Image 1 (cartoon, protein in one colour):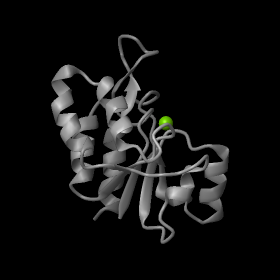
Image 2 (tube, rainbow, N blue to C red):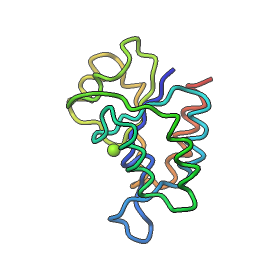
Image 3 (tube, rainbow, N blue to C red):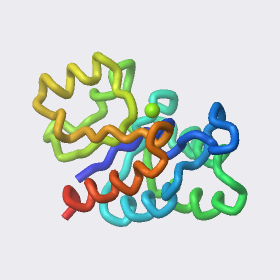
Image 4 (cartoon, rainbow, N blue to C red):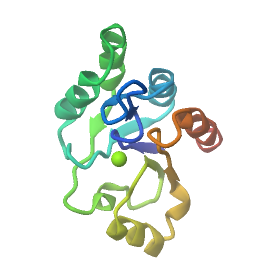
Length: 145
Ligand SMILES: [Mg+2]
């Protein structure tokens, strides 16, 4: 089973002190730790196609100093998916995956629907729901068993 993770709006939420700024979401480290121990994890982050180093840098830049070492260690276990405008082209054809994202595009939603894959996508939005990674973890626990 592969787990595809978006970054902005999922692992990065809003900074509680400056909501227009991004910050590592609550529970993000524990969540990543959980998921890299149980699945093959891929970034599916719109601005980081095929570039795990850039994805990691983006993530780490918004984390507190005290979280950075642990975060880099976890991010090193994640590879970057490669895609064009439609990220669903990076999803495995056998359907053995789940995808956590706050906002697939209309085209991506249509593609999931057409292939009968809507149930493999979980809406997670840590800007709207700061505790959302706890719910995401519970959802994943059922899927990764
Ligand atoms: Mg996003």
